[in-house]
Structure formats: structure tokens, C-alpha cells
Amino acid sequence: MHTPLAMASAEPSPASRLAMLGHDLNNVLQAAAAAIGLALQGGRLGPADSALLDVAGQALQQGAGMARLFLGQDIPRPCSSDGVELAELVQEMAPLLQHAIAPAMQLELDACALSGRVQVDRSALQRALVNLALNAREACPAGARLRISTDACTLVVAGAGRTPGRYGIVRVADNGPGIDPAVAARVFEPGASSRGPGRGLGLAQVRAAVEASGGFVDVQSSPRRGTCFLLALPSITT
Image (spheres, rainbow, N blue to C red):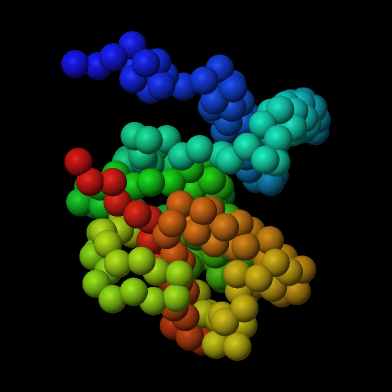
């Protein structure tokens, strides 16, 4: 039987509730701003529509900045205790990802339900996948293919930054020109990327999003054989 004290201690404090509300609000604003940014990059809008969306995008970015200011640097960004269904998230993002790489590339999805539920910040993972799609679009020639698949694996032996356990896997692979090994070793560093100096902040965000969840990221590539980014996220077992 629960005592009143035990029951009260299980309730989140008002400060925690406000932090969670601010975090969710920031997620919504960031997702909307990202969609507007992709629409503007597409170059298919008239000047008037582009101007209106640009104003809306700036307002959303300001709102997201206010949400982050409200949260404060000392308040951790919580991952949902329910986690994220990896295959469902990838399927839901299909229109956004297709738009990000169109018309130069073709998108293929293989979202396997066995990838299960993972512990990760939903908004951060969405931004990571968009960043990888945009990186592939700029690195690959017209007509190339981008394949995004999900799976699961069990890591038995620990490694640097890698804890044994069950992981949900996202692979983002292209059949483009590939990356030189010397560049691949530094591709997640800010300012270094497969697309040239000063343009690697997107890939740095990918690694930060995955590692913040307790996962790890890897890249496999060689010249003329394409590139595959692997995102491993801790599975939530029930």
C-alpha cells in the first residue's frame, strides 16, 4: 500500500512540468521551422509566398529561442520515458525526407518494425535524419539513390563509447561517390564534412543527438562505393 508521502514523491514538481512543457513546445516549433526551411530551399514558390514563409520561419525560430531560454542551459532536455517507435518515425518522415532530396535523388525506405522502441529525443532524431538527407543530396550526383532502413542488433562486446545491450538501428545509405577515408575519420567534427570545409555542423548535430541518448554513430564509406551512416539508439525493453 502506498503512503501519501510515497505517492506525493512520485508526482513531478511544478518546475519539472514547466521544463517538460517548454521542451515539447521547442520540439513543435523546431519541426515547423524545419519544414518551412525545406519549402523555401525547394525553389518552387513565388516571391510573395516565399516572403510570407520566410516571415513565418523567423517567427518560429524566435519562439524556439524563447523556449530554449525558458528551459535554461542548466535544465537537461528530457527524453520521453515512452521512447520513440523507430520504424514509425521513419515512415512518418518519408514526405519530408523525399522533399529534402528531390528532385536529384530517389528515396527508398525499409522501416522494419523489429527495430522497436528506442530512447532518444524525437525532435533531435528528426533533425539528424534531415541533416543526413541534405548531406547526401549535396554530395551525390543527380539520379543517385538514398536508402533509409531500420533494424535492431545486440552489442555483446563493449567499445569506446559503446555499452553492451540492445539497440535500434537506422542506416542512411547512398550510392554516391563515397568519402575519402581521411575525411571520413573527421566527418562528425564541426566544420569538417564530406561536402567541403565549413559545412559540417549538420553532421556534428547527428552525432550529438545520438550520443545524448546513450547511443553511438558510425560511418562506412569508400571512394566510388557510396556512404552509409549508422545510428544506434538504446532499445527500450518492456
